[in-house]
Length: 179
Ligand code: IMP
Ligand code: MG
Image 1 (cartoon, rainbow, N blue to C red):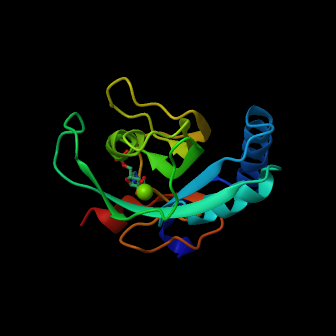
Image 2: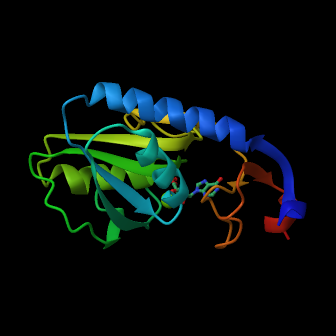
């Protein structure tokens, strides 16, 4: 596992500090509210587990699996919810927890689908903002880290379902995915 990593981008300590700070910020912003935190499986699972423990609110949790398809992130319905949440989000304060935003396609598609359910508010907390060549209009409300356009794994993030269990976030060696 570790031998496939080119370098560590964010250490266990970096992650702990950033996620704790984000939890504190969300707790302040949602003071007196009972937000529903939605984990976008599978990549967000570790971030989600740490984040909700850093939030000092009376919160609720739910889970979904989204799949993006098609090539354009402009077109509506480019994201399909494969496993939906069980909660009714109408008039709720909802925080979607995502692992990483790259093109923004997943977030954009989810936004359209979930807004149609009329939540009171809908915000996005992401672990990593790759911010690489995507158009305007799709930006996370909360984020822990920015990253360059490299393939990163660990702390829930995978390459072909591997490396999710690494405790840190690292850049995957190019020879692993470029054959
Ligand atoms: P987007 O729809 O292009 O924003 O892509 C977001 C999804 O692509 C994320 O939720 C991840 O599942 C996956 N992804 C994008 N970049 C990476 C990466 O560097 N490592 C692991 N997964 C990634
Ligand atoms: Mg994902």
